[in-house]
Every structure is written in C-alpha cells, then in structure tokens.
Length: 238
Length: 238
DNA sequence: CGACTAGTTGACATGAATCAAAACCTGTGG
DNA sequence: CCACAGGTTTTGATTCATGTCAACTAGTCG
Image (cartoon, rainbow over all chains, first blue to last red):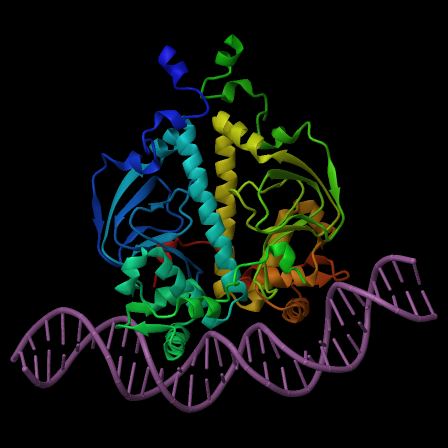
C-alpha cells in the first residue's frame, strides 16, 4: 500500500530514466505476425478487438463507398500504432502495401493499461491529437487544393518522413498510383500526369515509378501551396 | 486523506447517480462569456491555453491557406466542447456563426482533471474517437463525392442532429452558404444550384435560405451516396 | 424607401475525369 | 538470352462537372 502511495504523485518525470512505460512497450512480449502485400489487417466495420504495432512494412488505411469509390485516409509506417482511435468497430480497412510484420494486443488490455497509467493516457492523447491534426490538414488538401498542389504536398510529406541523409538515396513510394490517387481524391491518370508535370518543372526526378528524388524542395513547397510561413492566421485574414 | 483514499478506486460506476464527474461538469462554476456573430473564439496557431464549452449558439471551425482558401472542418453546437483535441497550439479558427454563449477552462486544469480521473480520461478518449470518425467520413466526402452527394450528405447530417419532432419545424441552417461551401469543398454558386436541384427533385423544401424541410429522407440518403446499409465492407469488396 | 449583404441564376471557361491505347516492368518459360 | 503474359504506369483525345464572372433577386436593417 505504501508502495502504491509512493507511485501516485502527479509529476512522474523523476522516475523514468529515458522512456519507460510508453505505449510501444506494451507490445514487447508479443509474437510477431506477418502479412503478404495486399492482405488486410482488418476491415472497416470489423469488431475492433485488437490494437496493432507495425514493426515492418507499410499499411494503407481506407474507407469505401458502396459502389467502390475509395478514400485512403493515410499510410502507416514501422513504429506506428494502428487501431488506437477505434471504439467498438474499425473505422477503416488496413491493407499491407508492402509485406508487413506486426504485433497485436487485445484492446481490453490496451485500454486497461491506458486507464491505469496517466503517462500512457497522455501518450495516447498526444497520438490522437496528432492524427486529428493530420486529418484536418488533409481535409484542407482535399477540399481546396489543385491536383498539382495535392501531389506536391504528398511528395513533400513523403520526403519529410525520411531522415535528411536517407533522402539523398531518393524517396521510396511504396504504394501504387491507385493508392496515391485515392489518398489525394484524384484519378491515377491525373496523378501520373501531374508527376510528369512536376518532373518537367525540375522540382523532382524519377527513378522508376516508385522512387522520387526531390531536387528542389523549396519549389516543391511553393507548388504545394505552403505558406512561406511568416504571418499568423490572425494577420493573414483579409 | 481518508476521503482521498475512498475516492481512489478504479471502477466508479457505483457512486454516480446518473452522471457526475463528466467533462461538462468541469465547467459548472465558470462564468458565462458571450460573442457576437462573426467574432472569433480563437485563431489557428494561437497558443491553446483554454478549453471551451459551447452553451449557446453555433461555431464554425476552419483552417485557411495563405491565399485565403478556406476549409471549414466542422460546426459545433450547444453542449459541445472546443479545443479538447489541441496540444500547444490551436489547430483551427473558431468563429461564431450565431451569437455565442460559452464558458472557458484553463487547459492546465482540464488536463490535470483528465489525468486524475480515469472516467474523464475515457470520456475524452471517446470524444476524440468520435471526432476522428467524423474527420474520416468527411475525407471520403471531400475526396470522392459529387456536389450533389456532398450537399445531400450535409443536409441529412443537419437533419439528423435534431430530435425527430424538431425536424417537423424544419432544419435551421445557421451558417452562410460560404461556410457550407467551404465545409463541402465547393463554391457558393454550386451549393446554391445544388440546393435548387434537390428542391426540384422534391427531396427538400426551403423556407427562406436558412430553413430546410426534408420531405423525403430516403431519397435524400440515396442522393447522398449512402449505402442501403446491408453488406459489410468485407462483402462489398470487388 | 434605399442601401447593403446574402443568395440565386445564367453564360461561359477550364481542370480533372473518362475512355482508349501505347509504353513500361517483372516474372516465367522456352 | 529472348519472347511473352499480365499487370502497372504513362500518354493522348475528348467530355463533363464544377468553377468563374457577371447580372439579377430577395431579404434585412437603418
């Protein structure tokens, strides 16, 4: 009981060496599972019984209309958690874009771990805030950006995911043009044409369809409709 | 101290008559503030120092590109909380669409209350999950739906927000056509034309620009691209 | 009543979708 | 090593939905 009391205090900073009790830690003992490229980890509307940690590969998250029209809400990469934002049902379908290795944890366990630890609670809240921020960015892209701005934004985001040096070797685009199109609310043809256009402008160079070199990040950012990033939103009002 | 200990146990179900210790309860003692229609509660990129409870009125949440293009990510109504999904900065601008009455709470207090109570933590997580689900729905709308489907979806959602009987008196659209257009990724002209079209089809009737009667919810749902709601996503794969 | 703003309608332009075909990969088998 | 099959990506020609620009109308507030 005394121990209980001693672990209670609010500010926990002191007793964690670098980073213990992180969400990733919950998956430590779990067995590794694998998925072929194209297979699904879960489907939209499935009961959301598990939470997943992506160890290796790339996953697309998508939802679809009855007639097959599809929206890819995002992609997930090694280290990311999947399904943390679900309640009882899966919000989206998760498909392996590359061969995947992952671990799984029963949602019950995940939830009780989060409920038991304020630190985990905070980490989860942070993750969800980030997802929400990304979702809002993406709504702006889908609702208001031109095809060129969308593709440029996408390539730029892909480049920024990589450590600077890795970028020298080119940005790998694991997903198909169809996935990119469904992510950007365009058709494959438009994605293809737009990439050709960006290539023509000298902002990027291609090495096969799946590898891009960003030659001129500044120009790409400009084409992406990014603000030169000075004034506040308040100042920018017309 | 004994009292402290007695309030500690994890499963609190027993000591709450109907619903105490909910997030809304945190705002109970707070003074009511007011905002004229058109005024902003906070701006994109402002430091996120407070969390708000909307008591009365309607608020639009939006982000903007440097050149003024705008995306309204959603609307908030009485009872809703605002700013719960922010970290250190506001993700979006919140503007009063109707005169607003609201209460505010320092984020610090909000966060510590949430950290202290697993029940509040769960409630907050639930709210954020719902926001995320709404965001994904909206991405599908923006990326893949036609103008008609977008407007029909919007009107349907507005109608469904109201209790059934209230619907008889018509669905009030507090926001301007510009707000609707920015929400749906369209222009005001297209919104206007599309509403006219829906009116022509007999699905809706207008009473002034700000009040809609949904005459045929089934037809409207069909025009909105909603599935007749039978098969699972798994079954619907082509 | 008049002025102002919001909303609607019309004519026309255009960016992206669609339909179609060619080029490019990647792996398989001779 | 080459030929071929099946898939993905690119390119081309054309169409169409939505955007743009402009005028008109309907509320609203002084």
